[in-house]
Amino acid sequence: MSDTHTWTKESAHHFSLRHGGQRVDLRYEPAGFQSGWAVYDGPRLVDRRPEFMQARGVALKVASGRT
Image (tube, rainbow, N blue to C red; front, side):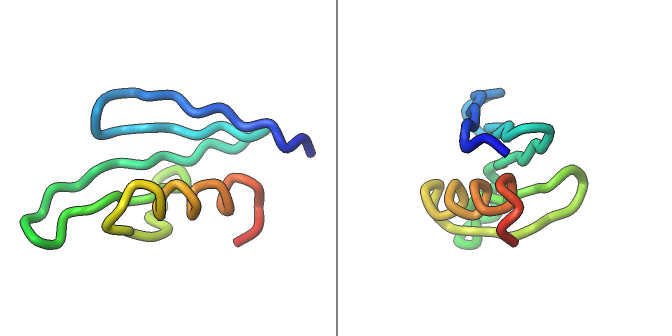
């Protein structure tokens, strides 16, 4: 599989990552002091991270099949 991935900004609080046939979504979920970025593989919640760059790393691993 190619290492090429494509990020798309759906909105200020929603980004999607495509890698081959895989799509992973990052969505900011406001929840007061527990606010953060949720990583979704389709409808399945994979992880939540407080910072965007942390969530981005998780999304890259999921999309490339390393989780």
